[in-house]
Image 1 (cartoon, rainbow, N blue to C red):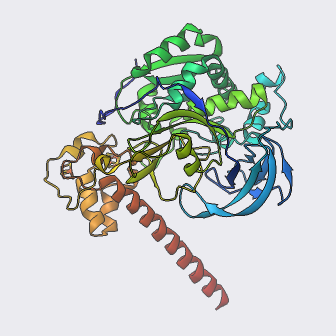
Image 2: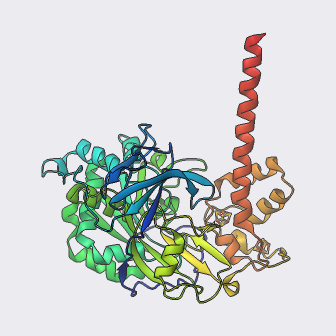
Image 3: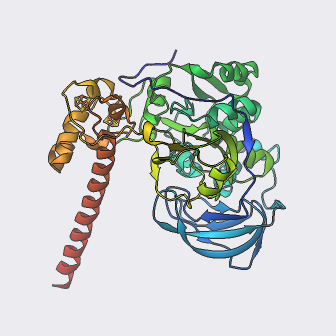
Length: 450
Ligand code: SF4
Ligand code: SF4
């Protein structure tokens, strides 16, 4: 029986898992950013003019918190230069002219039967295949699992997919149930554990039934049907739902003996180990009322958003807002020439009518934001002190513990930009910390020279 968490909301899910998965034909040119993970960005391993194969490693960084990057197509490298990144800014990217042949790279052979049961062989393969958290966090998976060894006693696979619109995980469960269970089994073996828990919201009952019909216990997996409530898929809330443990403010899942990986990450582990295919494509959802034909699609990384829009029949209305990820926690995209990366779960194109911003947001002191916050915070006061840039008070009201779930903004009748403000506040705290560190270092250097 899963445990319940405080607060949360029930948004209109607007999901369309009945829209079958289509395969987006890779574009004539892919733009592969050298940063598709948390941690050290990759350095290109290829030069302009080189021929590459599909799945060939084209970027690497030996730093522990990093993940190599592989070519999503076969073809010729025509540029290595800064290009628009989906998370903003210009980031070095390898631009490849697609020859349309998809000539596969054979560097990664499928693991042998023996290796499929070997913890270290699996961990090496997860790293070599460039697998990162595909739920959006993009944390390198091999590092995450290694970091938990000896501390983690519970592996959780996140199948909540609680954000409206997004269907990629649900469809992966329906289309690749056995592969998914094998991927979870591999993650479990890599974690040195006998059992893994797969938390799935009950609004995916078809997937729960299908996975249960395959006897998940033979893979060391237990399916845990969960309450349908946003943000059930938040890492801390998955841990609460499955184990009743609470990650303390500022703490990490490993601190309470848990590791959480996403559904598509588990599927990517299966492909890397059983098929020798590195991480260069994923299932994502393109939706919103500005787009002509919403789709659930398997799509190669490095595909420009403008090309994806064309593949969906273009716009029927001018989008007012483009969101990467779900509407509750997603990030605003500012450039349609940016490309999808390993962590892009969805791209939503919203019109003026779907935009909730108002000219004069006003707090009516209704207290609704307090009742829905799953972290038991007080968004009303956090916002008040954010506006005053009162850092001491913001800290006192635990703004840094905000998981940016968007429940408060969603429920606020005054339409205050609460979550956006807290995201900004956290950035301001990080900037202040960096400035303080630089000042302290400069003072230490000066003292040394005296
Ligand atoms: S929900 Fe909005 S209007 Fe109500 S108290 Fe919170 S901030 Fe104010
Ligand atoms: S304050 Fe943060 S954690 Fe709480 S509801 Fe708002 S966005 Fe979510």
